[in-house]
Image (cartoon, rainbow, N blue to C red):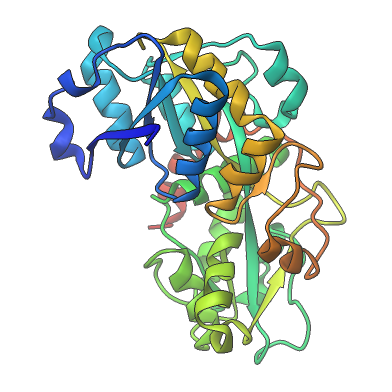
Length: 341
């Protein structure tokens, strides 16, 4: 196999693993990845076929991988970090482990909104944060915007994850970017007032709460609904989908992305790998692992997304996603002040 998985990081406790198995080698690129999809093997094999560069991978949680690279310092074997959410990419940037890349190909292929302004990291697929509603409770969508989640007509109706969830931190950060901190805090307080229950569980639990009648509306990433649609269509049938802010700025979309590690031993190969992720081939496989949307226009989408697209137009907010990380600390302070646990 062209791809060699050299170790698996399962938790922070695994950070003391030896790095001897991934010593720098000519013709190789070492990837620390928070992704865990079978389609990635096809990506890595194709990259090796095209370039002759062997791909070595280490899998783990985003925060654990960031901490590992930081701990390894100048001796890290990692050339590329792959992770999800601009908030986590920002954390890696703040940890001082990334190296800016100036690539004409990446600038040409990727929209400015999914690229760090100075090239610290790049987004290669999009994940939309949507609103879901109970078809049994409502004859029509009760809101059409994220701002509407704070409307007092939804008192006791909203299910959403905790403030510690990076997806929600990025969503609030986007509202700070658009409306300013004061209005964003008013919104967050309004959502708390509308909670159907204390935040609990993951995104799937929020959608399931709508289907079970626990709440009237919920917020979750789009692919969690697609998983429910595949595994439990009877449950999904009870849930309506809202693509928010289609008459305005567009739906909030985050990214899965990658970056070149500052002290990686194979920088040139790392840059080539990032450029490959912007190719038409990679733009079909990289998003498909999680039914995400490609960032390159006309790259094509999965069959599931083709069907999902019929549920609503997809106008996407074009604010630079780097702001999600920049405003993340302020977002967390707002969450704490309004009592969003």
